[in-house]
Image (tube, rainbow, N blue to C red; front, side, top):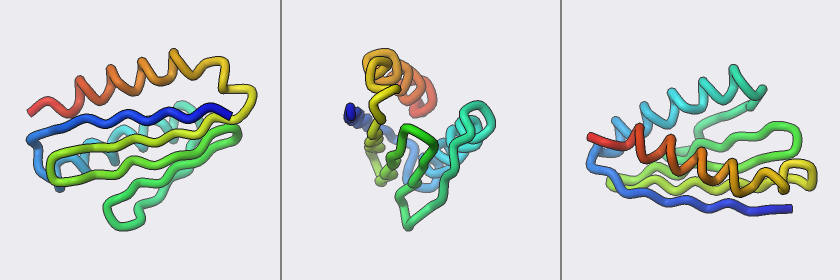
Length: 92
């Protein structure tokens, strides 16, 4: 099992960052059959072979992802994609 942790700062404010996280979760749900739900300011998501969370703060976002055995080999690629998406979407 591989773990991915990515943290980024932002200046969007908590509400705008939550909207961005919601948008990304909707895209993941459509493309990769991901189920998600909000638990306070944490978006929890799960699919076969992977689960994790996106913690949204006033000025930071923390993504934690656990990959099962089959997806572990793709860990570097998945981490790079998460970093790219966060960098793009968290710009003010």
